[in-house]
Length: 307
Figure 1: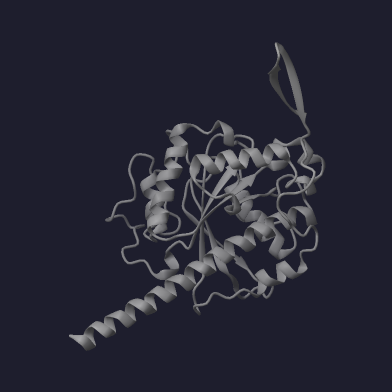
Figure 2: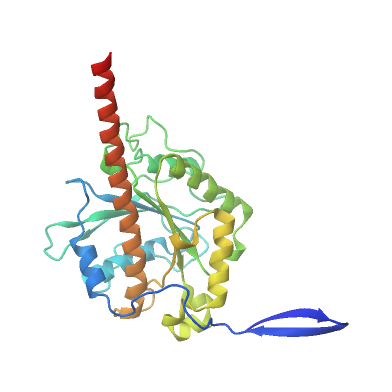
């Protein structure tokens, strides 16, 4: 329970704030995942042959790899551990740039969105901001092992000189540990802001995912349905939004699968909510790019006719 103190005529008056709000500040359909899940399974990008490339970045140990595994577990209806995870939360376990595709139920095709995982943002031993910028533009090839001293160079075998549309990132996702978000150093915040500016200049939509909410907030651990009633979580999200500039409606709290060995419909609901919005962002980006390309082509044609 939160408690604040206010001086009242020489005395101190305490006001207690319950940990849960009276009403949820965001609506979610708990446990009723079938229609939303089917929407994800039926999704097709507006351009045939294209997929949505989703780049995950954030501090070491935030849960980037676990989120990928959680999404695959949700879609394939059993636990999957395709992205390797380590229990050391303070050092990045991921050392390479990795692309993860999720097979559909037929085993022959893949979902039209892919995830990219990378080394975590650390003050001294983390991924270089310049390398993240190269991935946004599609210049980094899969399996590149990050060099902590220098960014990927043009003459490196893993440098993609002429990236295709499918090589480029369509959605940038910042993954944050709810336990440590308030302890992020100024250096990490500055790295995040630098990456966000690059994505903004490229027109890439950005969202954030708050992980480990059950570990950070006892009321959520007790009842996951109270996630959007948890007062302290909302305050943390609001402060984070102010610090890095990501709007509140682009921040999604989730609980990744970590110690479970069977699926949980409530966990799935939060993961599915975040995944659906990520796909919507990617779809909007592709449609906008498609529209702008048509306009550019039209204007060039007009110029040619008028010259």
